[in-house]
Image (cartoon, rainbow, N blue to C red; front, side, top):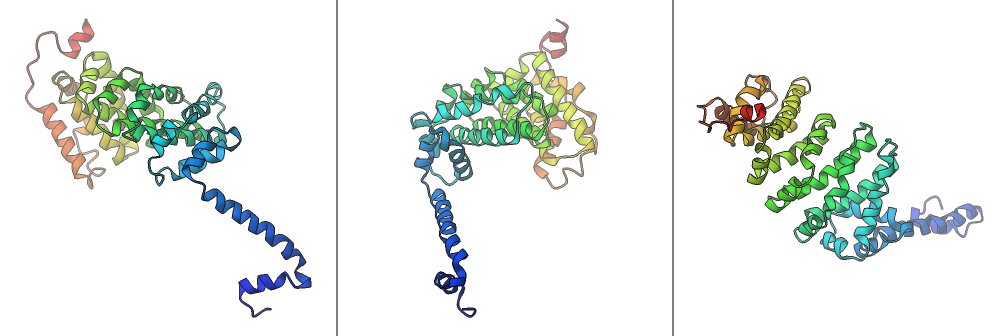
Length: 324
């Protein structure tokens, strides 16, 4: 039997008196392989149904989150299936008690992040995006963004939650921006921009950037001096930190935020005094060497800020507003 092909020698062992142990083990191994294969072949419809079964939910969350990119129209299926969104919300609110004091375990974080990944799928689909917003679903994520623990489970939770909001703003839609501005999204993003990991800071800054790029968002930030300086202070602190630990990806979003702010006359006037000096010199020239787009944005920002002053009506500048 030594010269038989592997497949034949395994079959022959079943008839060999010395192969009793292997003959007993092979059916169980085959059964396990068959079970694994069967699980992998479960349809998305069945996995969505499994979400409403507490005993099957954890595996369904894992499988759907891993395969959400290849399951076509998963978002409408999730939204329109009876009890599915309620099951996902149940996963989210079940974590609230361990947010403060911070007792979130890696396993809990992974599980709720799988649920958040499915909500991101719903938030990014054109057929379910506004339904998601009209149900005020993002508000369920805000307690996660309000956490301050820097442990890995919490950081993963914040990053995944930001991913849901990022999916909403990625498509330019004033209704989405208006909804988010009616909530506390700006202070929550600013908090993450101050204390999150580099990746969380990048996503949070991207969200603020997308809000600013909408006229409604720019007007909102620049309506009061307090809002403008809250954003400006955080951006300035981030620029200072990047001088120590450069990140071209994060710097790109920061510069784009500044450039958009300079489109507002009052904000542009205020930036003359509060734009970080290290953006005006060659501090980041090496960091931006391979990024001509961001270099062009920075040049345009400096041109806007250092160019001729735009005459503002008396009493409309931010400094005057703060005095009053």
